[in-house]
Every structure is written in C-alpha cells, then in structure tokens.
Image (cartoon, rainbow, N blue to C red):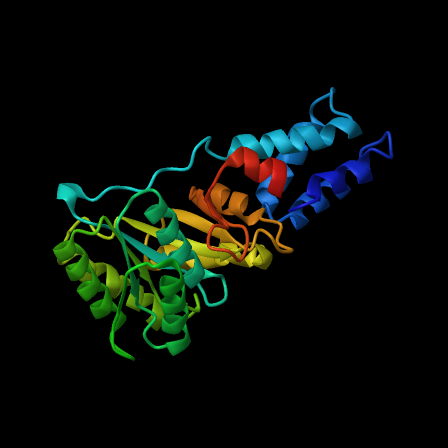
Length: 282
C-alpha cells in the first residue's frame, strides 16, 4: 500500500468538502475489506471535527490500532522437544522462500533449525529449498521423489528429536486452496507429526502474497478449514501489493500477521511491526 496515504491526502485535501463515497471506494481498493472500510467511513462521518486534511491521520491511526502492538511469539514445544512449524500456502506466494528465510532468521537468533522439504511431488520446490539451504548453510531433510509428504515430515521430526533441533520447519506442497484432496493431505501431515509429539505441530503459518489482494482472504478461509492457522506471513511487500489484506484477514478471522517478506534477499524478512507496517509500507 506504498503511497496509499499520500494518494488520499492529494485527493481529499484539494476540496473543502469530503466525498464520503469516494473515500469508501478508495479504502475498499486498498484491500482492507469492505466491512472495515465502511466502519472507518461511518466512524469519521459522525465526527464533527473531521475535515479533509485530517482524514489521512485518522485513517492511519485507526489501522494502526487495529493490529496488536506486538506479534505473538512462536510457541515452544514441551519437554525440550522441537517446535514444529508448518508453512502452508498456494503456489507462487513465496512459501518456500519464506520457510527458508524464517529458518535463517531463527538461526540468527541462535536457534538450531531443521528444514523439511515436504513438497515432494514438485521437484522444483525441493530444488528451490535445497538452493536456499546451501546458500544459507542451513540443514535440510528431504525425502525421495514422490514420497508421501506426511512421511517426510514424520522422518524429519524423528531427526529433529534425535539430534536436538529446537525448530522443525516443514515446507508443505503449494496447495490450490480449492482442491479438497490436497487439503486432506495437510490434515494427514498434522496427524502424522502428532504421533511423536501430541502437541505438534505447534504453529501453522499461512503465506499470502500482498499483490493478490482480496483473494488472499479466500485462501486463508479455505486453509483454516484444513489446518487451524496461527498467523500469516505477508510476502512481496516490496512490489505492487497494498498489503491491506493483512487487516482484512485479522478482521474476518482474528489471525494476525507474524512476518513480512520485503525483498529478494535472505535478510528481507522481518517480524511484523505495526508502526513500521503502517508508516512505511502502507
């Protein structure tokens, strides 16, 4: 949503009279969701102290306050076992890249992290993760070509338990969220991992592409049916995406963003910060 607030300022500061319908339309196109857009306009409309110049600050502050002040930390597994994180999402969102970058971020914090390449039916996905782990010197567990993804996660979990890793990050297949059989596979992965630790997986992170707008909300709803989501990773914030869908997902599903992908580099990945998000990225 880079430039969104300056666009509002330029549009509404030129006229002493506020066109509320136009403001609502602008907010809807920012991907924050129709409900949030309508609520924002209704709230400002009722206030007598609102003028065209103050619309931007009011909108910015309302959006800022909607997000939690701090993202929820990743959970910890009991009894010193590895914390298991499933990274899910449709193809093309930056899911595999995000899994690698998250592992790199945690490693930089002094954690021992194992990555599992569970997208076994797409050789390019395994190769992509291999390239990342080689480049970043991260340990990787990969199964055989076309091996059942649930068994890959199970074997990786065995290795993580045996070798004392603190985190296991499973990069699952890029699912088309409308394909029921692929969603069933996610459910199977959860059941299989729980055989060695009934509390696992401990977090499921959905990767959404900021450029897909409202469609990312539909993806979140479908994935949530197959595997309860804990948080969202919003990628491609450096592109043409507005990023407002993070607010739409929060409003509709009470699932907050945890991380942002802000570029192509390994370090272009950061914990969500609402002030930075609103001030610099929106």
